[in-house]
Image 1: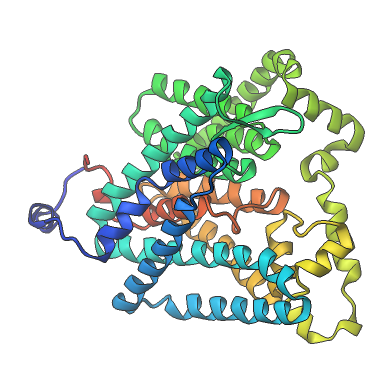
Image 2 (image 1 turned 60 degrees about the vertical axis):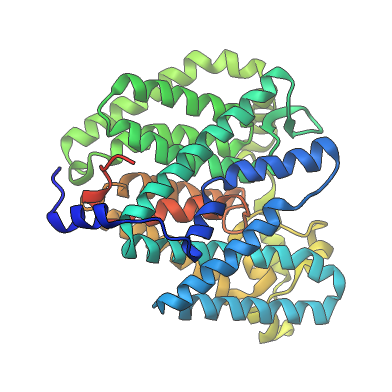
Length: 422
């Protein structure tokens, strides 16, 4: 693919400038590794250095400053939803005291961080696509291998179990297993898409098996399910404009046959693993719906049964708070992101974020043939929307927000630049 003269001139005129965006990249590129380091100190040594937290808060304010300097058209959306969340948090603290602040402040910060990073990435990718592509690729590639190595540590007795009470799954030195699963889906979609477009099917087979192996090794149901989904969906949606053709239908049927054959072949192997035994036990006891939602569907029904006209409009718009949720189900989180957002901060942020997530999917469907990364971004966002609804820890994840923003930013970068070597 040829690059026009203006792009070449821009490439050769680029110089290193120690400005605010440089500081942002210094945090963004190694952030997955920093998460692992912070987890190592907190879990292995017992010293919570909070390095990851401090750097992410710093990144949040630096990103906001960039958006203000750029006079971003998305600032109104960011400001509106952030102010609404802050007002809802204040209302909850006034109602329920310090307990509400402890439970809901981290939740609020993670949502705001996710939104700000998405807008920052989208603006940056349109303003300076070459720099954005270079460092986004670097961050996502590095993050992919950091996750791989951490999970593989588990087979050598290093790191921690995803479910420590039952010794199931490996998460290395990362703190949160479900968040790690969601992060791994994003990083896998990026990596698999790049490998597929190199037209080397042997490499794709290797990375597919690696993604499946790591997904199973992490040990969360959502991680396993969406690892399988990503491996088969990436080639399918890379058909782009031919995705609705007879050829795509044949490929889809072949992929389904391969998937079913593969599941039959590894059934007995999975059955010997602790995670496999757990899945089959839950399937026989609770059925498919119970296996997927792990009882969350019953909690959701309890929440909606609790809502009544007697509560008035204030809780509907500002949320019921984590204290009310704890009294209802015995936990401060349902682990279903749209419902958690509604309970914590009211109907407006929950609806806006859900519509925003759906809109990203629609955008990439419409531009499937226009942007190089559209197929992987589409697959990742479909997976994450479903993930948010059945396992949570997507819109409210401190680990996922940055990688997810970078991948979405790549989706709107000029396609001619995406094939340039770093």
